Amino acid sequence: MVSTTDLHFRHNDIFVGLAFLFGMIAGNVMVLVAGPFLIVSIILMAIGVYLMSKGHKKWQEAKRESKLKSI
Image 1 (cartoon, rainbow, N blue to C red):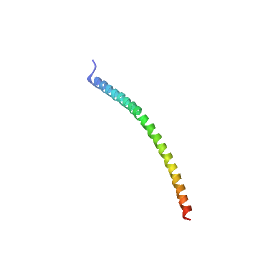
Image 2: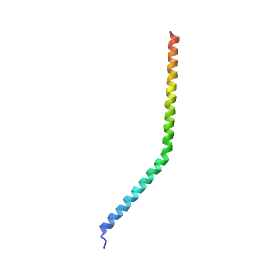
Image 3: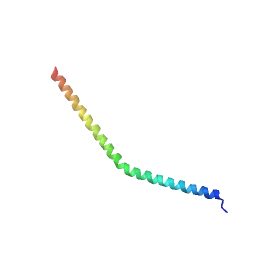
Image 4: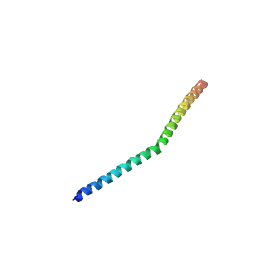
């Protein structure tokens, strides 16, 4: 005879296993879905930083020219 406590514990193990499996699948799906967005956002950030540095240099040059004109 198998006692009811053994059955109960086995039942819990099955639920834990299913929850773990579901969590793994959900995590993988999230990574697959978010991966491309992450890459695109990093590329956009790099372009933004590059444009900002270019704009800052132009702004510094314009400032320098205005100082020379004022003298």
